[in-house]
Image (cartoon, rainbow, N blue to C red; front, side, top):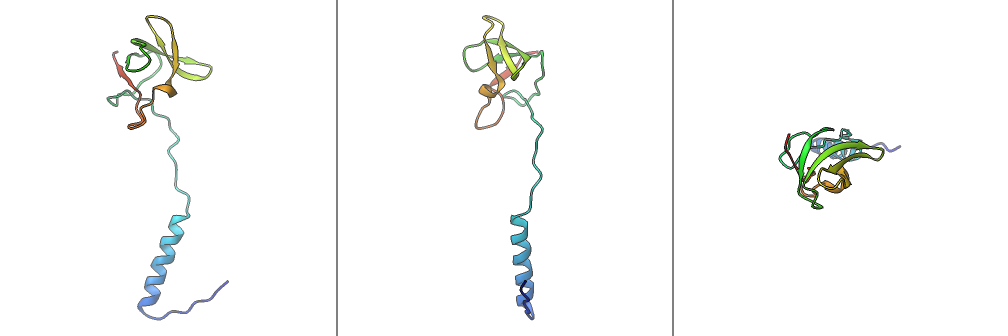
Length: 99
């Protein structure tokens, strides 16, 4: 342990610097809640009908599977995980809610 004795304005500067450095290493709370929203920001839930902008699925229904939520095409029955439909730029799903 070190003892540092500083007088005057230098103490204030050192105190602010130490406080800033301590803030850099503190743990920040994380957002753990998963939000599934369409491209326009509307929330999505199981059973909603959506229009897919990827994988030529057309109209889809949101279903729950063992791996998590997925989109099931109404035309051909193909299933795609919701993870594959995430837009990298916005974090939203590449679908549009119809119902």
